[in-house]
Structures are given as C-alpha cells and as structure tokens.
Amino acid sequence: MDGQLSEQPLAELIREISAKSLGGRLRLENNRVQVVAYFENGEFLYAASNVRTLRLREYLLKSNLVTEQALKQFNERVSDSDVLKVLCAQKLMTPGGAEQLQVKQVSDVLRLALLWTEGTWQFDSRSRLHDAYNLKINIASLL
Image 1: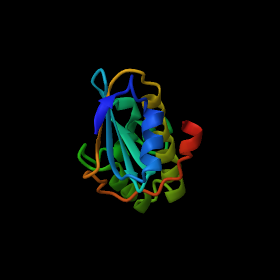
Image 2: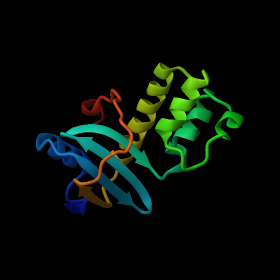
Image 3: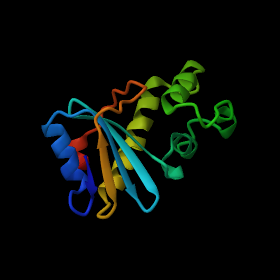
Image 4: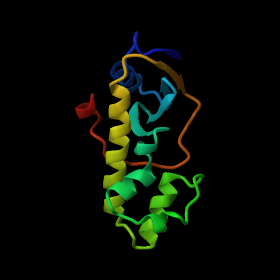
C-alpha cells in the first residue's frame, strides 16, 4: 500500500492500521526527510527519522545524561536499543531513564510526521523491527 499524505494524512493511516490490526513498517517522506513507524497487530511500537536532531545520540547529549566521550565507544551502525543497553550495563543510565528518553524521542519523531500535509507514504507488511520495543507511548494523545 502507498499513497500521498495530502489524500490520507498520517493520523488517518495510524487509525486504519490500528483498526485492521496490521503489522509492518510505515515509511513516510517529505522533502528528503524520512520517518519510519513500526506496528504489530495494530499497535504502534516505534518510530525513527533521518533528522539528526531526532536521533538518540542527540537526545542523550541534550539531556546531559551522558557525555560525548561516553558515546564515542559506539559507531553509527549500533542500534539505539544496543546503545541504551550498554549505557545501562555501564551504570551510565538507569533502565527507567533510558525508557523515558526513548518515549520522548519516538513521540517527537511521530509529532513531526503528524504535522506533514504533503509527502508520500508506503506500508510494507513484511517488514519488522529487529529489536523488541515495549515503550509506553500514548498514541491517542499524539493523534
């Protein structure tokens, strides 16, 4: 499935995915800015973007939870989930703090995409997340 956000806005797409209990990846694009959102059985799981300020490393630095030096141990290919696991194992973060930060990050990514009135979307029911996420995101309040 694919289409235009001007014809079917993101909030409508999320409601449809939820109502049909779909699982997969929803890819959105607006002027080279990309957002991907993942769903399982209609439930929103996770979202990410190619916008630098919406990346986990930026959130960690902005919130002063870790130093830039602490982040140098990770290359760009290390998943956000793995970064947080290592930081928690090294006692540089608490698991609760890591989850709160990810909820804020993922909510901000979704907020950005919800503002779009132009752009394209594509839903792939075969695509799934590699990492397991169980973030408590109030999707209804975002919509």
